[in-house]
Amino acid sequence: MMEDTVIQVEGLTKVFGDFTAVNNISFHVNKGEIFGFLGANGAGKTTAMKMLIGISAPSSGLAHVAGFDVYTQTESIKKTIGYMSQKFALYDDLTVRENIRFFGGIYGLTKTRISQKSNQLIEELGLEKVAKSLVGSLPLGWKQKIAFSVAMLHDPKIVFLDEPTGGVDPITRRQFWEMIYKAANNGTTIFVTTHYMDEAEYCDRVSIMVDGRIEALDTPKNLKHHYRSESMNDVFLKLARS
Amino acid sequence: MSIVIENISKSYGKVSALDTISMDIDQGELYGLIGPDGAGKTTLFRILTTLLLPDKGMATVAGYDIIKDFKAIRKQVGYMPGRFSLYQDLTVEENLHFFATIFGTTITENYDLIKDIYVQIEPFKNRRAGKLSGGMKQKLALSCALIHKPKVLFLDEPTTGVDPVSRKEFWEMLKRLQEKGITILVSTPYMDEAALCDRIALIQDGKILEIDTPGSIVKHYPKPIYNIGANNTYRLIEKLNTYEHKHSVFPFGEYIHYTDRRDDFNPKALKNYLETEGLEDIHIEKTKATIEDTFMELAKQ
Image 1 (cartoon, chains in turn purple, red):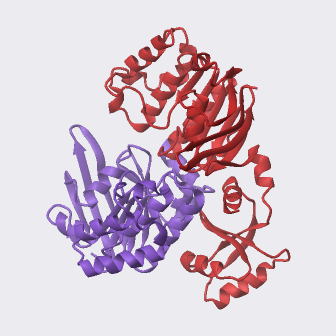
Image 2 (cartoon, one colour; image 1 turned 90 degrees about the vertical axis):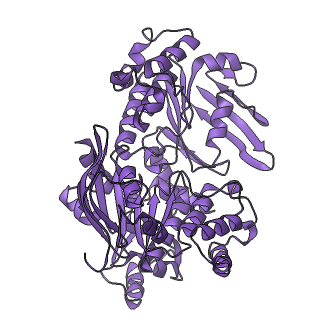
């Protein structure tokens, strides 16, 4: 494994009964890279991601995440990564501060560290006025920004983001991406799925899954060139429709 | 006129969901409500489909008053709510049969209208709705909303969370329904879908920012926009944001969309500034505003 490779996947496969959800995929992700993991609904993205974050055992193939084996070292993986999804990110009936304390505790941070991190996060996001409000009362865009910061609480090496910006307004969506750029610039690896094709352009490299296989993997620039397309949207349509 | 909305307001406690909204939608028009989560789109749908009473204002749908004639409206409209709301433990065919029966019709009577859409899920007609994929659920929900041949169709975020291929197919279906004379009011958080509507209303925080055709809305954008690219996007955004003359800086796919505060903006001076800040491969080129640019400009004010 190369020194700066943080995710290494070789022939990873997941079979449910007679259905192959993930079919022999191979790729690697470098440290500090923003890696876009795209595909149509039902292409196998979620299944693949579940194997990488250590909550679903592969049927066959190899994968290492932050140096840990996805078969035998799932607990180490979970401690080393951050995760957020659109569907579940924070507890609505806890306040902002309580959510931070809860997730900090889960990740085993000390009380002093949690309190430091809470203050830092609340200041950075300008949340002083709502720190004691229930998360459920906040706009979706704010929640997603807080959820991302919470997923970064324990300084993970890799953060997995599953459709983090669905339904979020265009300005907040961009502020969210600025947070992603900043994290990547500081050396955190970002593994992200999205249905917004303009966001695919923000990634360093992009893979596109079709029916359980990775059909294309390259920089957005090279993909557009290769498929003679104006935008990532056209690349996606060409691949997923054929 | 198919839908008339005059000064509708609705609050939930202290939160104002809709604030004096007015719009007219023509017969057979494909009309888009464009705005993010929390803009008030669902509240407006619920008022127009007579599921919720407004605090103030009036509205008519297909000529009927939303308060007095609510029963007549319910017979004339089809509604596809944002959350999947079919019966998960009935099969595809049972769901469709159920909705047809409720409206006093049969699947065969209006099969023509749903045929294009329903044939795609017909191979799975004995599968329970709860076991369908996202794209198939969406097609079944649309078939159920159409089975009584409504005059007006309300679609609340039908494509949220749906991949670009299924989204494109869905909009092609809407265009075909429009050709059959059905008025369609559709909401979406995807700004690229706005371009496919006849007219759109941009909505945020319960207020209408602007109503016009997609073509006119982008022409109203007040400033020249530039595409800017460089070797390091993160540092480029940072440096553009600290440039003293910047008006707005937004990532847009491959490039950053930049507008300047001055009328006599000189791209060369900006290029020099970025170079002295250590950026390389700098690319500055004039570009056209999109609906998303316009939305963000209006939302900022």
